Image (cartoon, rainbow, N blue to C red; front, side):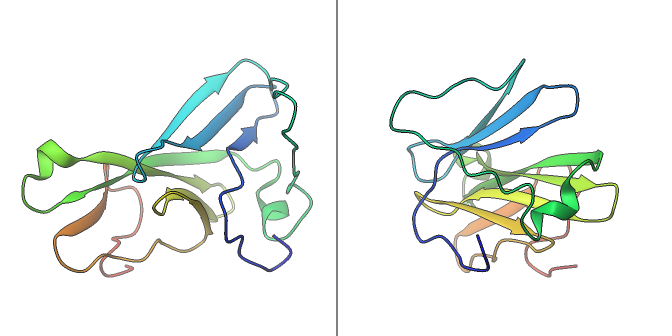
Length: 141
């Protein structure tokens, strides 16, 4: 925010659509996964919460009123036993103006990437797109 990376998790992210529906994306406490759910409308949070609206800040302003053309789940797991250890570690969106937004669980804190990919892992862990809709994490192509 304001050109600086947040060093701590700031809570869920909400994408509010022009028809009023809300997609809320949040971390799962396992340090690896994310969960997302659709809501009919934005709900008021319990006391102690506050909302930061990034709609008018760069680079998020470029996503305002853009249609989402596609989305995909970012999967995380170990190479050995891939099927048994797979989790949804993030979700990515491609917008009609060519931009992308990825919400990713980077180990107990959320990272949001605009027009870039999360870093690849070396060794026994890997990140892959479930449906291959985005760039390959290893090569960046």
